[in-house]
Length: 424
Image: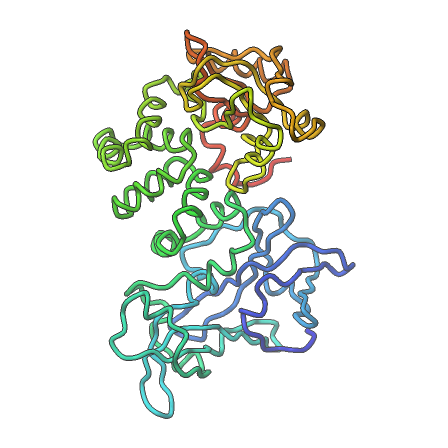
């Protein structure tokens, strides 16, 4: 083992992990420990994120160095996805920000865990030995106060701390979310799915509404239902309003009818109206698959205006590839659908030109009752990213995007299978 033989887990987070030949294996995402009443907590391994955002387990017996801002391992890494066992604790995910009591020279102190120190011994075992704490005022129990960074910091031995594994008052998830800050919504959803139910609820409470809405769309249906039924109804309404309409409609369809109706009633009328339309369609038709918020412009709109709309950061990639051109009104159901303009075409034309000059009228729209099979064939035949959906009066109702189709043609539990083993 290369020096140092003692390190704080916070310093390990995001360090690159290399094999003996110098090839990068991945990055550290967490540290796994086992607690026992008879002895100090033992560190048994690292959770390492490998290419493809898969989290795997690397035993500490394979770690030969944690020096120089990197972790060196020996031997082959098992690429099976890490699955936490009942007797295992994720230090970053579960212990950081936990309220504890620490024995110091001044007596018993109410504190919050800021970091955990681990140490290597010559028998090749790693142990939890130190706890870095921040003092908090007595009887402070609210989440807002726990998040306060005021207070004296100190380091004590793990044996002088009680409450590390106590499931009690609410625990802040602020530091944990800092570790996840670089993850996109799909990868954060995978990380959230790995957490214990209690820790997951704390993370959900700490996420802002927009971020939670993005994460919800990437979770398996059962997890979405669990979360939206466990949070306050007012926040559930805010999350649904922040979600893409098609994702929100899918979630409403998975909820008990009385709960779905309660949420729809509390939503703003202009937010609820398109969702009520969407859930009225069969989920395997264009109406059930489409989003009601594609980019729509009148034929007189300029190329510059169209490009400004697709540049907006909040517009999904699949939506930003196509501008649909219709007669007024421009909110679904629109006036007569005229055609579409692909992003590549917009980039080739002068900014002052009107989009109505460059319409693609060869791509046929699909009817709102079109079957999933017909939609899939349309995408495959014309190499499309999105396809317009119209009614009998040729009014644009929305658009089906390729990710909507994939969601429905993949196996029912494909989101859950993201967490499973890679099959050769």
